[in-house]
Amino acid sequence: MPVEVLDNELTDQRLNQLTQALGSGMFVHVRSMLHDMAASDVAFILESSPPRTRQVLWQLIDQDHTGEILDELGEELKDNLIKQMSPERVAKAAARMDTDDLAYILRSLPDSVFNQVLQSMTSQDRTRVEQALSYPDDTAGSLMNTDTVTLRPDVNIDVILRYLRIRGELPEATDTLYVVDKQDSFLGGVRISDLLTCDPNASIRDIMASKLEGIPVGMSDSEVAQLFERHDWLSAPVIGDDNRLLGRITIDDVVDVIREDAEHSMMGMAGMDDDADTFGPVIKSTLQRSLWLTINLFAALLAASVSNMFEGTLEQFATIAILMTIVPSMGGVAGNQTLALVIRGIALGQIGQSNSRWLIGKELAIGFLNGVLWSVLVFLAIWFWKDDIALGGLIGGAMLINMTVAGFAGASIPLLLKKMNIDPALAGGMVLTTVTDVIGLFAFLGLATFFLLN
Image 1 (cartoon, rainbow, N blue to C red):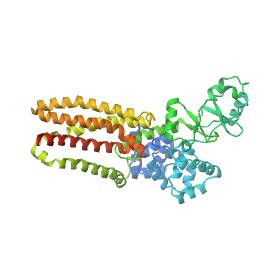
Image 2 (tube, one colour):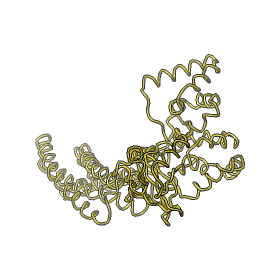
Image 3 (spheres, rainbow, N blue to C red):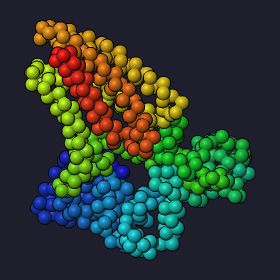
Image 4 (cartoon, rainbow, N blue to C red):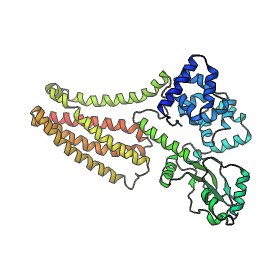
């Protein structure tokens, strides 16, 4: 999970200090600097360093802090570093990691290394890992931690408070303790604030929130994030199909999901992996980008083939060749506005079968009205600029057609891709651009050919 961005000036200063110290061979000093830095700061420095510097820094990091630093790294860099670690070092790092992060790391290992790491673990850690790996990736089960404190409903608050004092500490980010029966069936929760302020002679049953929702273990992580956002939760219990309490999800894991979804949408628009390493190797980065560029080339050739169909028109009317990019450009911008709106709605869970048709109709109407408005404006602009009312009418008509189609395509393409289990954020932009380019050129050149050459 990528680290939070630190203050730029402070980060640059630390990075320069480390780079200069490495260049001077002051490895002991660098090791000391890294030891004194927070895990998130070290992770940020690693992600901001070129590969060669990164390798040296990684070798100088205290192995006791490896697990905490791996927790903070982006997935691509994390995978690369883990592949270089011995199974014993991975097992040692695992002891300091949360269950969900540990499960992710082990899923990315080759089978031979995976088995070696399991053998190197203690029986307690091995049991913890096997439980985490039993849940599919990107579900509530893969996000949850099992470090929960449970209570019985018939116990007095005073007894619970004495138990907590003897226990000494609570799991990190604990704001609620969960109430279960003897079969571990989930009954509700008690907020820490209520526990500390209520009558110590009262029972847990008297103050527990019995309507507290449990998150099904198979729920997708995106739906979990939506629930946290909607209810302003800091933590939430995770339950199995039989209503047994399995663990809890905390806000720090949900923030990671929200950030990853946002990065996925942003990078997906450019056809790139959301975990792409900014300072990754040249060859690997080139190969990662080549696939999308190849697909885009075929889309561009498709649009070019439309122009080629009207080669005779372009040869006779040079002005048309100059102006023909206006229509696809306006259609592309209008379509991308709709596309971004619909993709966001899908991500937030606001769009489904019940309202998708209405939304497509709305965006079709908006596309038509925008087409009317801008076709009139471009008609007047071309008329006054080129003193050619026919040419202004052609480009205005083509723009009306393309912007109407763009509104429809911007709404329907992501919904269609979602239905086909294709990520709209990844493929939607390229498909929409192809549609608006082809329709825009075909409409403009087709109208020009029909009215000017006939």
